[in-house]
Length: 252
Ligand code: PGA
Image (cartoon, rainbow, N blue to C red; front, side):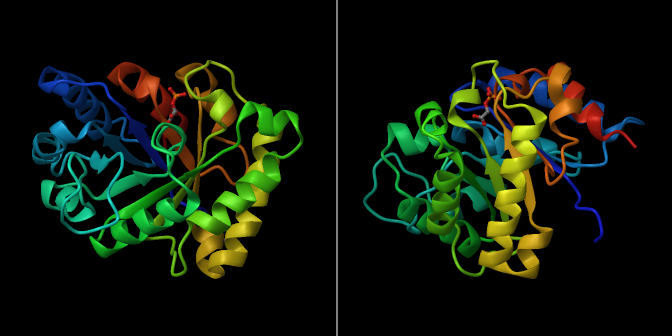
């Protein structure tokens, strides 16, 4: 099978001001020079920065994505953002179902699926997140939880172009603790099998990202695991030098 072109996406979460564009500038400089990685590169800044970042990054080798969207196109939903608005602002993708949204905003698999469909409707790639909690892993339920999240969150019609899956064990996010490469290999093999079932040949080509405490120091170990086709990076994406250190895994 042809190898899958990786994606490394930075999730800035609720961090970043207009002055943070300096990091984006450094990142663009890093990926557009002689050190261009063999991977797609994306930053998902807070919504307030999407339009200006997209305008600045245009043609610079860094795509811009959103962190969440509402399922509907418009209406009385104070504080929410439609996928169409993200696309209008210059985003090409949106993260849906991040564990912080699932926990803080009580988003169900059904909600996540509706958001993924909204992303497609707006022409965005949906980065659909799944992952078990520490308690679920301790109980031996990690595989069944992730399989259930995939079946509930990935809509029919998912393709390698319109969807990316991000496996992010909740206990590894922002903690500095990561699964072993063997644990990741096992989980990603299961996810690949599930996605083959859900999306057939498209599932076989879909990008499966690993996320949770990815740093320059562990990227080479974690991102070269079988069926890992890139990363979703939180903390280490806020600093261009750290993010470039992770991208160095994909140097030609
Ligand atoms: P982290 O976050 O890299 O800071 O652990 C990952 C994420 O939540 O996407």
